Length: 357
Image 1 (cartoon, rainbow, N blue to C red):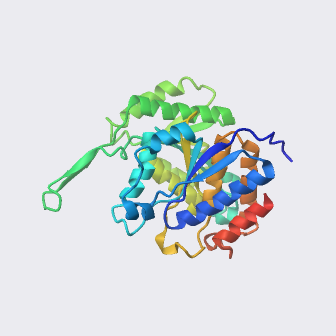
Image 2 (cartoon, rainbow, N blue to C red):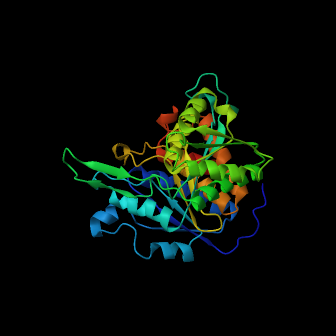
Image 3 (cartoon, one colour):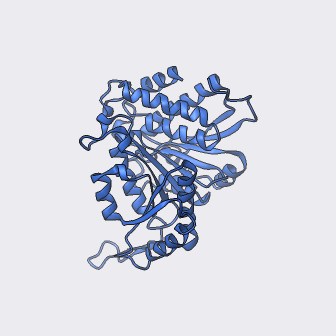
């Protein structure tokens, strides 16, 4: 058994369950963390926050005005579930909470690993587990999601809609450096930067210039560029060629969903929103799936793996690895929900993982 060391001062973790199945899968991730507190002595204090559609419909609160300062001063990390509810058609609460935290805390790194846990789950023929094992880094605060734009003459035949792709030298350079440093720490030797500078020479020409300068400092790593359409094609043709991918906000969002399907499905996909050295946020990639809510059918493994990413971020690498191994065993022994071919409910999967821990 690993030596987890003596308990230290409690690390406060904010838990935002979200909406729909977010509430159900986050419950199982919390169950896993509580189990690790008990069996490994992890010094975690989990604090539930009731932000989501129910709170918004009750009193109009999305992200409270003091939320960001509270996170900075009182918490080490945030575990958040999927947000979205058909009773709030605009999803204003989801945008305010999720994007508000990302932008407000300057969580400029979106990290999504893609690792195939069982070859039978890959939609590509004749692929082994080791053929799908790579890491996507997405710039998380700029790009097409920066919210710069507007609509002129809405609802008329002359309607004009504009949304700008915002890229700053600071934003591009720091995500590139983070990806290269990650590769170096992990002993990985291949990194790909992706953009669409052939069609967007102004916005993405900046990525080309920054990439040329940053890569010069990492001669030990083989680095190359692929346009995003070529990268998407290559991911399907031969995912084994990739180790680290770094790209902008929009393309990273799309490519990481493609990657999650190669790795067995979006229900297995975790995500981290990071600012190294500061409070950061962890979540499963999937949405709130209102049609499945309350049925105890949703796959909780993405949320549980997001908790594992959080543990690793907090320095509890042994505990994080325990969770990863338990999830891998659950998938391979078919202790899983129906999307993975199993017959377990959401809560039964969580219980199974906790028993192995």
